[in-house]
Length: 112
Image (tube, rainbow, N blue to C red; front, side, top):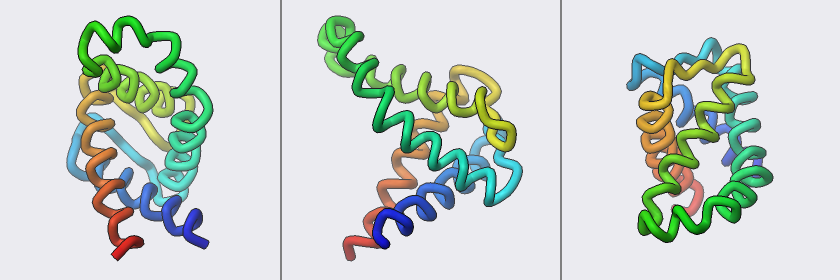
């Protein structure tokens, strides 16, 4: 039940990001649900492998390269889905940061 609520809250966070940032578009709530699911799967399955492969550059940049990895995963999700679109890399950076903040704030609603 909690997993379903987190999924819905992440979709709402994605809609908020699309509302705030003009370079990110989400067609509908259904598209936001699918995009949140794909982002969750990419962050669970692909991102740990990317972190492992880019560990030297992450250490050299004191962890700042993780922002680039988040943006690339966000941008990739926007490129493979129809109802979710990211205009470019810098919009992906901003979108990933705002999405992380929004999903974190909304997830705190479940803890409280």
